[in-house]
Image (cartoon, rainbow, N blue to C red; front, side, top):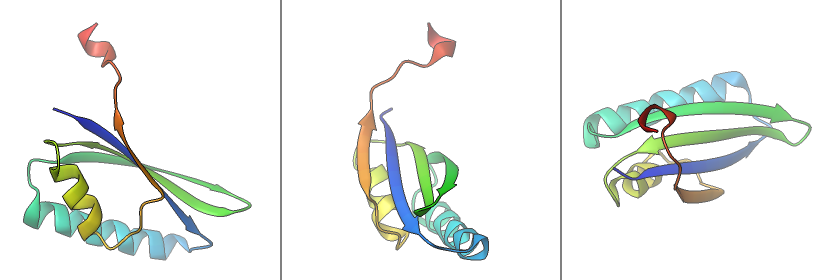
Length: 87
């Protein structure tokens, strides 16, 4: 199953805004894309908050989920890595 990395540069946002967006994303996934799994990591620096979404989904489904969250994506890439558990 393809894996995607989606980067979002959110700028100056509060933790409460990030949590609200995360809750909406979870609701969209559960209602429309139950087979998608994802993990989110956040980073903050002088330019604001960035999130990195690591998504495992059938081709096209990951893009659909990304679009329906209402959060703009700065960059979206298919991840071509090896799972260390499968080496």
